[in-house]
Image 1 (cartoon, one colour):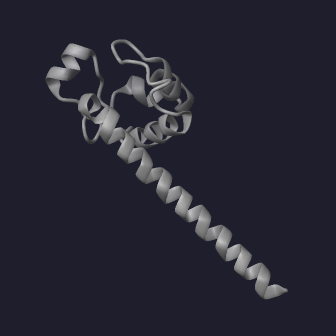
Image 2 (tube, rainbow, N blue to C red; image 1 turned 30 degrees about the vertical axis):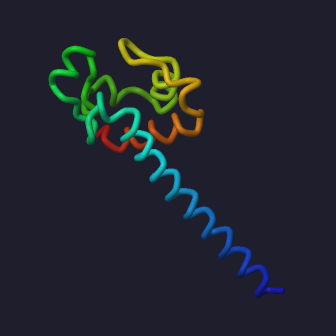
Length: 106
């Protein structure tokens, strides 16, 4: 009986680790495909795009103050000149891309 519980616990831990790694990988992939062209590979936009589109770097104080929920809403509904991604990405994809972007916000 104890061996069965240990195996079940190991399986749960492996699944959780795999899910977390997949979510991080997925967020990076989505960001690269949908966000990087404006927001830059590390959250620092190209100066021309930043000026034309009003894109702020991830280090901008206004972005530092935004909660995860605020960033998800901005990504879903659009903000300024940024197009809305609701209907183009799933809620999980939006959350994953926001989580990845937030790794640049320091």
